[in-house]
Image (tube, rainbow, N blue to C red):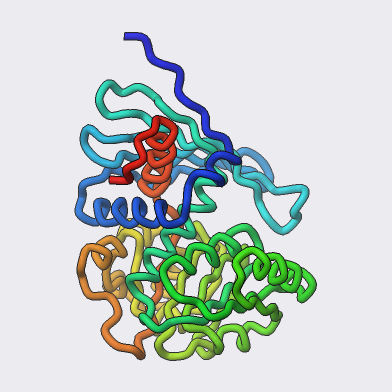
Length: 323
């Protein structure tokens, strides 16, 4: 049997076709399946290929006889954005009946949308139902995506954006406000930004903490997203120790920089993980009181990418049902 040519879905089509509501739904289902042992994946492999250059591979399967594949991408220093890295590559999707590769979808745009969708699913499960003020630490691509995704699961009244420079934060706030139709204010004062928030998302490239426990009000939910491996840290150890901590998977905590630092300092153990987010999405208790500070740590899992790519593949074939 000759293999058909896989369809190619570029970044523009991913952005136009992969909606946040659809992606939130399939990411939620994928994380439940991960926690129930119905999916297959291994931790990512990252190979240095030069100064500020890396090649990454994330393989996995959505389940037996289901889609499987890998995200394959480069992470290179972005010359156009000196403080950031560019992610370039594809999510390669195979079908589970004959093992044919059926789809190559732009990895950067899938990652942008599914990362925010995963945070939104966690927020829906863990944030207070009346949470309405969102604070974003960061003013890049993921900041905008997180605003759009979180707005799908909570009735936001306003957004606060923290940036290292006021000019960048203000430019981002003006653009975001025009796009989403909500008041968006900018600040460089992290304490002021955090103390207004019901929901906080950290989506920065920070190497050292930019969010501290003393700034966070009781009852806040936090999504920690920016650090995707050992080294960079966005939040202080005191905050890690304080929160009800929810992981994508218990195995992934080996690559959670903030969690590992707190372990090294002896203030937590592996038992500090209350549950995997898929367990909570599947019905296990998450928030226990209005005063709880809950935290979801995200580095990204391949089952999220494969679930998102499968939506795009089915849409291109005219199969619009998500499940």
